[in-house]
Length: 448
Length: 102
Image (cartoon, rainbow over all chains, first blue to last red; front, side, top):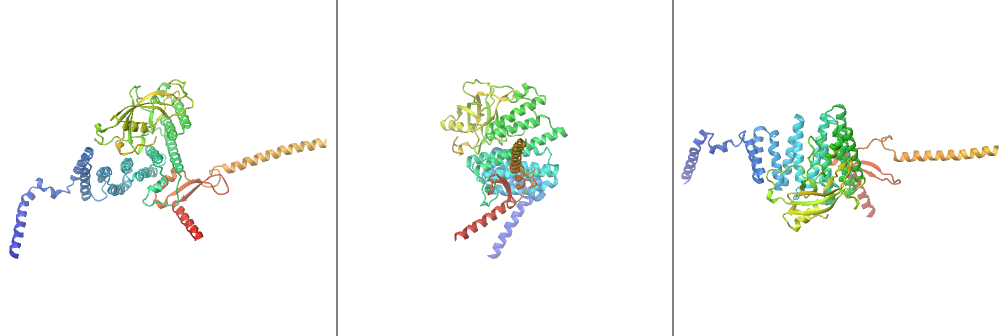
């Protein structure tokens, strides 16, 4: 009996060996893939497959492919291989979208661990990695399902600060490289203050920065908001000083940049309800631009259309082409219900939001309302810059809930006013096409 | 003549007293509101500098700066402390209170 069993095992082993023999002889056969599953080029191949799945919205498939890609690269190039960063970035994106928070945290730590090593080799590679990770964390903080949204927002901000530290140590504290990073931190503080206003968070960083909550120290809600305001103001001032330094000494940047920064400072005051200070900055910027040689018509045209605030990117140069006068409605791409007054910082990936699902609203309102007897285009010396007389002209889908959501969320928007000769002008009947954020249906209505 | 000189000196004395009083008041006010940069006290970090520092150190080495109003004055002063020190002080005070209440 035993002998018969042994013979059977030997027979089955020999037959399976005989089956695999021709495949070994032909390594290019399809059946031999298992033998080469760590082949060098497969890392790239898996990454492309993962990216394709990510763009199609198949996040689970993307996750599998990207994990394979990372494994192949690790086997071929070692644990520290920087080639892992690209698939890792996509993997973190897929996991955050799938809501796999713990898995994503592990990959985020791994990404940072590799990226910090980059700092020794090439600061630009390090900065690229930091920008990618900070962007992912910021996007994740805007996800309404994310229980760690505050933590991710703080982590994104801290990464930006770490980049600032690295630039200061490598290029010095007057490097122009600092400007976009400092502006990102300013925006982080705006998002933070939006979150604070909505959710009433206090003791902000210590609730969110580490897993352990520090007791015995709290900061009042208003104190935290004021701190965000002060930090934003200080950093915008610092960017302006940087620009002034480079205009004066190195001529790497045009004269207009410092005046543009004064406009950003006005925007910041406006976002925090300091209308008087905002107008003062706008007037000052207007005068500076004229002194720098811009014609009044050019500057008026720059301030022609109201701009939604905060501006998602830092403009360091005077625009080559100013927007032509248009009667088309303004467009506002809302980013997330978590930050209801902020426009989206980047284009969404692939078809993450199908056009059929896009909720939209067409609204009409007035800006800079003056005394009732004053006609439109009246120049106002001292005015309230808020949005007024809001009417919802239509929504897609057309129902009462969408109209109410549009009314609430559009009323939260803030705009840089139109200026004529450096003074705000009353604007009536502004039309705005509001494109709702993708996760709108997941959040209850806010109190206006 | 002597009387008029005396009256003149009295008037001048009152004026001088007023001037000295005004000068002292200005000096006193200046001392109260003078910025730390003008005094010998070291300049404390701004909110942005604190945040930049905190972003690069572990959580227990974070510092917190805020305006505090010390007992005996209404003039706020900026104080910076390590979070771990705030934590220790807080624990110490809780212990003291617990002992006092026992």
